[in-house]
Length: 407
View 1 (cartoon, rainbow, N blue to C red):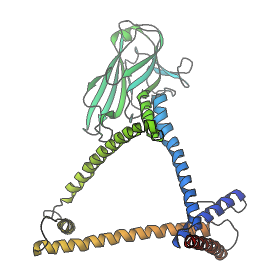
View 2 (view 1 turned 180 degrees about the horizontal axis):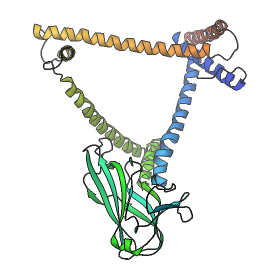
View 3 (view 1 turned 90 degrees about the horizontal axis):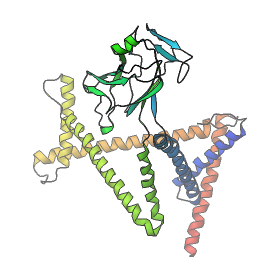
View 4 (view 1 turned 60 degrees about the vertical axis):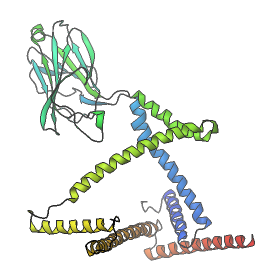
């Protein structure tokens, strides 16, 4: 919707262009004409260009390109704020990323528990965490544990691994969630739409426990920049190559490649459609079996009407036997009338939608007119422009018909 700013000439020009296109498209109500075809091609070109722009901005760049070329990580903890824990302080001098890092003394606090962490991690493949030790502890380990609660099973789960402490300075740990962790319980959710992507359950806490060797060594550990990562999905580049096969239809010698790509796409589409039909039709069939007895009176009446309408409509489409017997003929006839009633409601909704669209166009043409005149004069001006365009359409159709008669 355009703002009604009469002083802005650019917005005024955009408005009058939109008004001209709107009224020109409406000339199809008289007959198909050259003005309508010109504006139709204009709108189709805009739609194609805008669709390409949306595909690049919302799909190719953020979903495909970033997944192929970037790590796609999410922050678990950045340790930039001062903790309220005994034995842990904020250090702004020794840090890896951001404004600071946590300085943890396992001798004072052997078990570090982080509860204020993001709960939704999506479907990460590995974790990337930074630790720093001021001295090496060869026989020491840190037990790193992720505590989760699975909303599907309503049970607790955990992922546990051991981190060695035989290094000095900063070290980056890349921890694969499937290979490097010991799994207790069921940490992954069961989503139908994501299948094997293995979405992680809700994370409740992160735990870091130092063994006795680390505690007795009096080592100081810095924590900074913990992230969950999906990783570089380089194999998605093959999707781009496969998409290029569709353009081989422009080269007769390699046109067979486009048929191969199209056949695979149609096969995938057919399989997905069948799966979607089963997943949608199954619950609908199950919900159609409504109880009539043992429920409140209003619910029983509503369910009885629903079941009656369903059986009558299904009887109408039952063509295995002729509809001669009253037990078949009467419900089938009632089902036909119910279908006609339903189609009438659908048609009424369609008409209401068209009227809503028409009212929206009138609002654009009259109420959003940038001219500083009364609404009546705006309406008369729009009617004059519409009359001129319809006259132009009439002359165009008449000229085409005369040209056909001459030829």
